[in-house]
Length: 353
Image 1 (cartoon, helix red, strand yellow):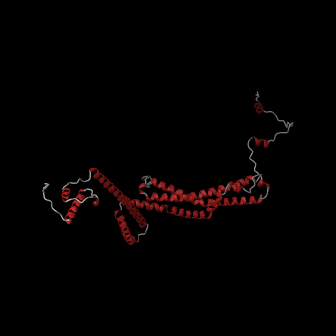
Image 2: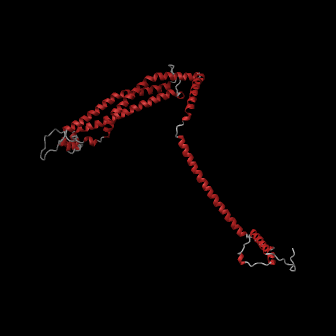
Image 3: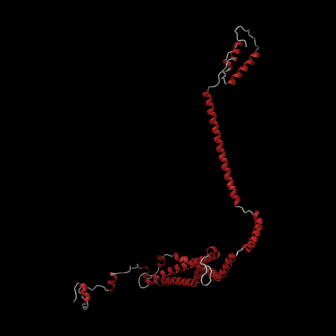
C-alpha cells in the first residue's frame, strides 16, 4: 500500500463510502471498540477513512474481563444451585410418593398368589412327610416314641384342666361383675346405716370386714386358678416338645430323662390344684351373699334408732380401761381392807425377813 503523501486520491462514490464505513464499524465491533453515535461523528474524508481503517483499536482491559468472568461464574453457580435444589425437591417428592404407593400396595391382599401358594404348599407338605420317614434316624425315632408316651400320659390331666377352665370361666362370667362391684365399695359406704355404738357395733364391723375378705379371696382364687392352668399346660407342652432340654439320663428304674420326668410330674401336680377351686369359690360366694344379707337386715333392724346416728366412741385402752373396770372410790371411803402381803411390801420399798 502506498503511504506517501503524494499518492493520488481516489474519488469514491457515496455507495462505496457507505460500504467501507460499514466494514469499519463491523471490524470495530469485533475488536470490542465502543462506537459512538453516528450523528456525533463528522463525515471523514477519503484519506481519514483509509487512515482510520488501518489503525488498531484496543479491546477491553483485563480488569473488565475479570469482572465479566466473575459475573459469569456467579450466574453459573446460582443456576447450578437452583437446579440442584429443584432436583432435590422433585426427587424427595417422588420418593415420598413411592413410599406411599408401596405402603398402599403392601396392605392389599394379593389374590394372584393364592393358587400358586396352594400348589407349592401341597408339594412341600408331601415332601416333608416323605423326607421325615426316609431320613429319621434311630435317635429321632426314640425321641418321637418318648414324646408319644408322655403325651399319652398327660392327656387325661390336660383334658381335666380344660374342663376345669371352662367351669371357672363360666363362674367368672356369672360372678365376676358382682365381685368387682363389692370390691369397689368403700368401707365407709358399707358402714352407713349400721349401728356403730352399743353391742351391735362388733357385728357391723365384722360383716363389712368379712364381706371384703370373701370377695378378695374369691377374686384371688379365681384369677390364680385360671393363670395356673394356662401356665402349667404350656409348661408341660414345652417340656415334651423340646428334646434339646431333656436331662437326667436313666435312673435305677430304667426311666430315661429322669430330671425332665420330675419336672413334668411337678407341673401335673400343680395343674391339678385348680380342680378343687370351684367348690371353694361357691362357698366364698355364699359368704359374700350372707354378709350382704346381714348388712341389709342390720340396717332394717336399726333404721331410725339412735345407734345409727350416734358418734362412735374411741376404744378405751390402758389406764382408761382399768379405770372403767375399777372406778375410783368416793372421798372418805377407805373401802374394805385386806391382808398385806410380801408383794405389797416390795411395792412400798420395804423388805421382808
